[in-house]
Length: 565
Image (cartoon, rainbow, N blue to C red; front, side):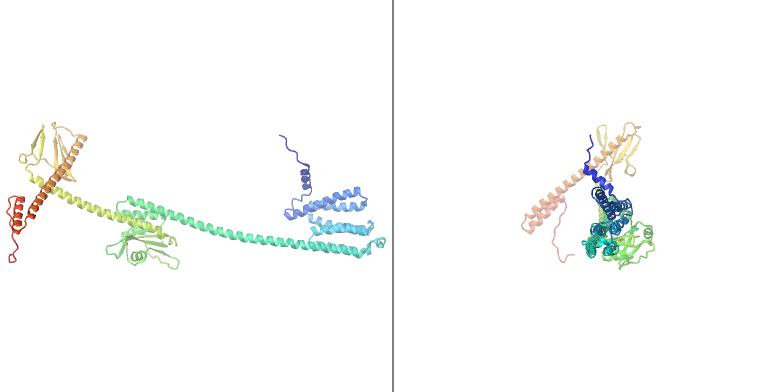
């Protein structure tokens, strides 16, 4: 693939840029542009002068003089001393014209001055500072005004030469260029001032934006920290709730809660107080810190209204205590000497105070008003757990009491049935069912502690109903040396369990039939009695029905006598 050939204008532009490139030591962009412009102008003037010397009938001395000044200035423009080149070019270009007049080289004084001095002044106005330009203008004007002292007399008699006009032309041009330079500099300063003002405004705006960004960054950082802290708090609440749901003891609930809150949120001390029955003291029940353990050992309690915990217990309102600020609190608990801030929240169940959750920190400003909501949720979770545990304990106590009463009822009922029966039980032997007779020594010995008793060739299993032994099931093997296997024992125990439920169902069915018969007889007697219309018939029917229902009992009905004792 052929590389495209660069165009001639591009090559010329690259050559021109290389010829006018300033010295590498000149780094400021404005100085680079001035040095580059000086090099370009002097290079172009050098080429023009060379062509003028070769083509035009210019005196060789004049052409060589101007060419030397131009070449030397071009060399200085490519060096670190380009400023010296500016002064040299403007002053030397002006001086050459007057030197040629002084030595009589120039044929026309007016033409020599008008062709060189304006160019020098224009260059000076473009490159020199104001002081340098004023100096050059004064020297050029003075030299023009002094032509009468050093110019060739034959030039002074020339009708075309007028010293005042020449000096006036140089002075006027100097004034005009100076005015243009001042106007240009003023405009440049105004632009610079506008640029500086814009830069200052931009700097002010940048500073304000940076300040806002810093404030927003700090605010975002605070919000991020608060969000992270709140997330940790809610995570702790979830963990505490999950942990409390697995605990089955109220004291263990309080201990687990204090430990988890302290570990997850980094608190120095977490304690849980419960209100006593008199509702006058808050008694410490759980704590995670070493000081809190000492307080637990001595039964620490606070009267309502005493300290932060007492204040919360008395008012039922949460409170934050800090050791700084307008509401500073002095913490003087010797068991917790490092406390710098504290928060306490009431444990309320339907507006009834059951305790206080207390948390203390080593930081002087660890709590804020926003923590009331988070810790309030935590306090509510703890309250719900305690209330659930209380209700569970009450339910367990009620269940135990009901089971005790029911078991006593079952034991009484089966004891009454056993007493009413003329025989203690049955025996199944070789396909025959036999009644057990106590007087023949056929009673079954009860196993120890109501458990299964196995002996060689014989096993005795208690027949239990809800933990109460209502009978015994004894199995004797034909082989007196038989050893009972686990599956055989399990089978016998299962049969005994099914038998207990069957016996209880039979008893309940008999009781139900007995109550149904009684209700039926009562209903019939009530019907017969209510069918009578006079007192005698009602009394007779009542006595007759009672005698029928009770079976041969003597019934006596009499009216109450006020004199009877």
